[in-house]
Amino acid sequence: MIEAAMIWNEPNNKSHWDPEIDPDWSRFAYMAKLAADAIRDVNPGLTRVLGGISPIDPGFIGLMKSYGVLDHVDAVAAHGFPLDWNLWQIQEWPRRVEELRAVTDLPIWISEVGVSTFGAEEVQLWGLKKTAELLKGRVERIQWYSLYDLPSAWPATTRHKEAEGSSYYRHFYMGLLREDGSPKLALEEFARHTPEIGLVQWFHFEDPRLDEAVSWMKRLGVTHLRTGLSWADRFRPNALAWFDRQMGALEEFDVTVTFCFTPEHRGLAPHHTSAPIVPEEFADFCAEMTARYAPGSSSLDDLPRSPVCSSRQMRSMSLPIQPRE
Image 1 (cartoon, rainbow, N blue to C red):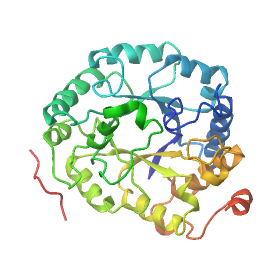
Image 2: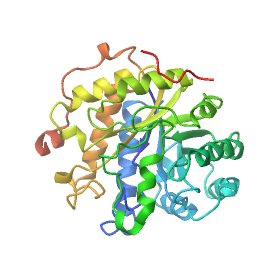
Image 3: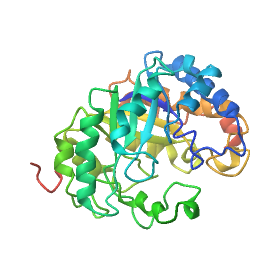
Image 4: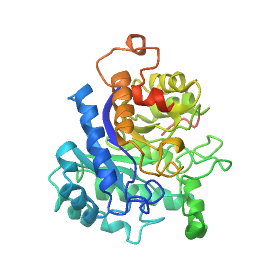
């Protein structure tokens, strides 16, 4: 079910890791090493990926290397959105990849790349074609962000809405499908690049889109999927029931699962971007989720159905336009 475990998401982006709490990223590095080792101890064969960086900054990868983090992972990842947020142009993708290769010999995954339809759907269609041309064959994994537009009633995961201005609203138009599930112009083009290009789809807690998303991904020929399991969500009532449902629905895909988001009551600050008070607790969560969902069991029926909390956690408690039915 899980083919890879990604440790955090965009750790060099303040929307996902607070640099005021951890200005030299030493806390993050320590936590990442603990998590990587915990995952390895449960399943030595599972690929461990350092959370995709955004912006693409070779210096950050060099910093992680200096802390020894790259000795504990099997790949590094990067995210790029040159038509929406990055201060570089789309044709620079090959150079950006080579800049990363200059600082590490590890495989490089582009675990998020996408284009919004904020201005026009034709822009996304062109951007998808150009991205495929520039990245296919250059990196070990490409995952397009995303299947669905973000519902307008949901907030985007960011801490700097005011600084982003109108760019903030691009978050809501990254899907190949509109909020109502209808297809955009780029959908059929995307299907021409599967399974070589995979997909990213984050599912919110008890997300009502899950089953429809699975139907669309099968129809599109997606085999590689990246999604997330939130440490913060682990403390919600019925968390494991939802995790089981989510991962069971995704069982037919090769899933990269991203472990991230600090529970407010376990952070040095009460926010999901905060470094945790006890970093070993995040490692415990990664180990628990790996034991529950990593390859080795043929189905969820073989997996434990009761909570498997650590003592620390216990204490801190040309395509058809419609998907298949």
